[in-house]
Image (cartoon, rainbow, N blue to C red; front, side, top):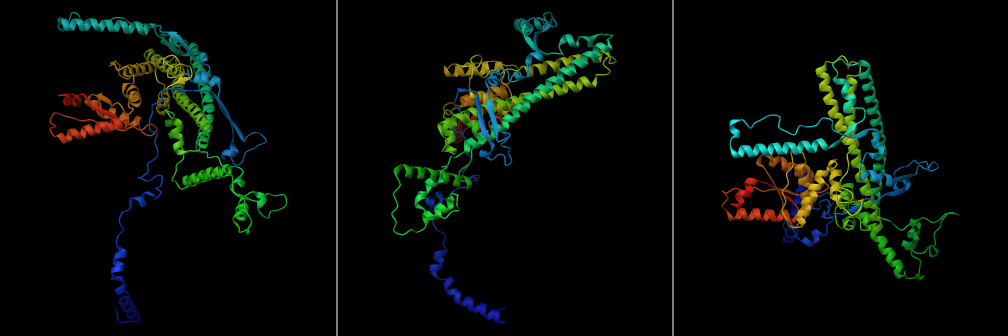
Length: 569
């Protein structure tokens, strides 16, 4: 190639001239990789969503008392930039965000009270009592001759009688139009078609009215939720700036700015005039107050620029919800927006609690609407031919309608027990433990009375340094409610929370705990495994370090009884 063409001659000449430069010691030294300088590296701004700088999280969840207060705000859509075309003449530019005393009365006791519970639910005593004895006799069985068997039978008989007495004295809510007396004509061997038609018509009308009232309340709540979400994000991330921008430049009287008649000079024109050379003219030195104001505004603009460059992050709803659990919520919020005032923080917390209880009520309404639609479809299926249905099928239908209507009535009349002086054990009717409320909000439930009482007993026992053992039946919420709630409250960095479960439930329990502690209230869930074949000191040291790390990071340890026994032995 080289030497065959003029291009080859030029290429050879260029390589010959560059060879001494490329091979020189100075060039080789210049190409060597510079030494690592951690000081320089640390000054490089890190993007928000990089692996080096994770999203900020609330540090602790130790707050045990907050207060739910009414509020009323008049927000301007134009100020928040939520609407471009708003009719200011008709008042569309302003919206009302409120939690009235009437709303507060129901939200802290019975969330669905505003629909008029007396029109739909009636609390009655059960008409069918449970028998207080065993349905069969085992005393004459050959295996019942031993002392242990006889004692077991006595205990069973006693437990059955106690349970029957409790259930027979209990009053349960029933759905008006679908009470036991309303369902009685379905059990007749020769039913009257007109009576059955009237029963179905009344039940359908009642369910339709209930669904209408629930939808109305849901629409009201969702409208407030949307306004609250937008207002919370706006207020939490707001950085107030000096409206009089002339304070950041020289006084207007000293500037020679050309402007049209009747118009004020623009800010950019003022800055240009202030920076233009004006000769030997003396400029008055700013006062200490002016200099302080200028520095404060400069910090605000710098913070906004860093937020735009994703060096600083905005506050989001999950972080707001988690900050309510902190003993110093103001400090947690000011980590992300240092320009919030004390009044701003109090307003944000108040609005956040209103947001949480309204979102939870929408979840309660959705559950009730689903049950009501199921009942309506079942009734409409037999609306025209109820009298022609065989008696056996009508008996099964009566049981199904009774079960579904009772379930719907319980959901509609459900009460909240985590607020107030009663079950919640607070000093005021509006006080509550925010960890209970955030748990209801996250998992779309209402804590039952038995669950709140049991958790409070465990917390009181732990505070006094005493042990406590309680028994709960299957489905009462041991794994999904009581365990996670106690883990949230007791894992405070000083104590190690350990959940001991049977081997068959280890995977399920671990998955439940990980599902509970994810985004809003993150906690690490560790698994402790140990057997007697472990003989290496290094393995035991690693386990000890793992447990210490779990305690320090406020994590939760899940293990089995076999692992605990092996460790003790």
